[in-house]
Length: 266
Ligand SMILES: [Zn+2]
Image (cartoon, rainbow, N blue to C red; front, side, top):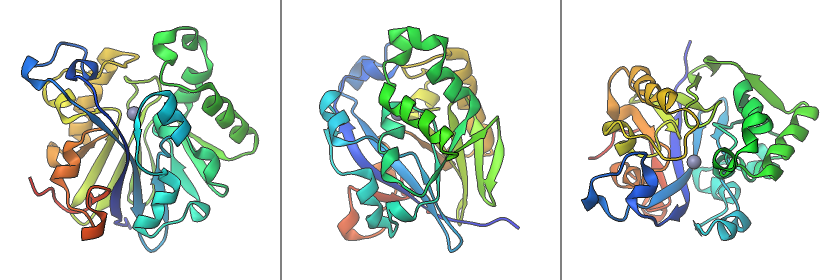
């Protein structure tokens, strides 16, 4: 029998930028400034808590000139979770903003696609354009986790737990995976960077950091397929609009945490 989960997004950082940074083709000129937000996601029910991605830390924020708001690991307390208790973490891909802080989870097993490790340690990392969003310390650190038997590899689509699915997409990187979570409002599709912004998939205009544009565009279609065509169920990986569309769990968490297991209000 399947299970349902409470599902949260925690915003931990932001980057102000021009819209042209977010698309392969030039966006509509009136878009102008188009910042992106950085999130981690938490799926929780009485049987387990699963963390999706681990964000980056203050040092990485300073290095890459991102506005850092809070430590992703510490911010778990806002949704009643605790880094030391987390046993399962899905790493959607190994980019610095998704796998930093992995060392702050001493009891976790990391769920990663085979092809992502292959990509991050293989021939394509010879090219600056393809390695720019990786941090070698994260990659080497995850290799060490493999030797400590703390990485569970996945190849393609699978059910991780009842009600939680992993879905290979590729495109943005060679081994990106999106995550589906059964909730009270239906099966929510956490795209992660299969679509950074709503406008990447709405406008068929992929994000600029990309390994394979064709796979990325096919990935937008796969997200829609996973959502049975209901785009309200798709949550992009970096879109500030999700903070407007979804409610905070409580007044004091406004602007920090949103609930994705309830329907969007816009
Ligand atoms: Zn990202």
